[in-house]
Image 1 (cartoon, one colour):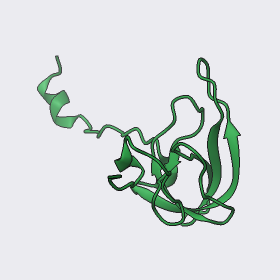
Image 2 (cartoon, one colour):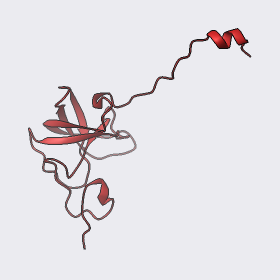
Image 3 (cartoon, helix red, strand yellow):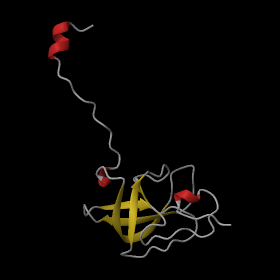
Image 4 (tube, one colour):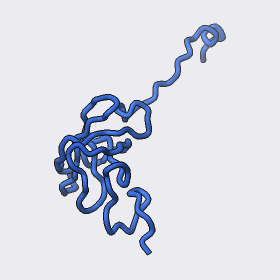
Length: 125
């Protein structure tokens, strides 16, 4: 139990927040240019070829890898613009960002019926 003097003269420190998305610098999204596209294989026990893009964040000039979500092919090319958001892929080490579909030059996946709000797809009646 601390004494009253210890309580009066103790330094008050605020707890440091754990920041996971350093490249976004506190912003919810950032705009980036695509540099190249690769595929990564996930950690055990998963097995697939996950699509990944190396992008250059325009405001900070940093090069990072981001995940390309959605099924099927994508319309991204070199020098096309994407909007990044935070959110890591648990089976891809080192990938802490993903691109937002349906914004800028990144189109929505075709034939999507479930989880449409994540990909910006209208109702398919």
